Image (cartoon, rainbow, N blue to C red):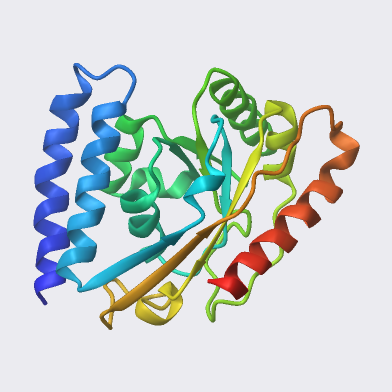
Length: 230
């Protein structure tokens, strides 16, 4: 109950703060720090600790960060733990959720309309431009949460983005969130540990669009390895 109350109260309060801060924060750096604080506070109240491994693999941003997706808890774990600022690429529907969607818009996250190919292509072009300008982007290549933690098929569109941007992909494996907060749960049901494992970056430089499947398979194999290692 405490974690539920904290999530609602802090979400509403910090949404207001985000709006105020965004007026003087053109780059979104302060907004990201606020989101990181909010995510860390939520995990602390829920009695959840994050174990992070592979920080030495973060060397020369910008990156397209790709991570498996087990639970809504992944978002809090990644926000609170990854030591570099980033924007999310997320499905368009999330941007219409009160408070959460407002903060995503304020923070400069990128909306992806999967049902409209023309708009999706525009979003990919906008994201590629942001990445080339130095913005880190984080994507869940499965496109949705796994019910049991099993890695789902990857969406090829995100690899079109990676090849357009021409920056390295940073693979990340996350483990434990599907048990702590299964798909369909609003708050965690257990206290425990989330394991995040960062792998070595995968280069996209000089690889044409024909390499999309090859790059996808490389990233998938690395994320599978990172999950196994946890």
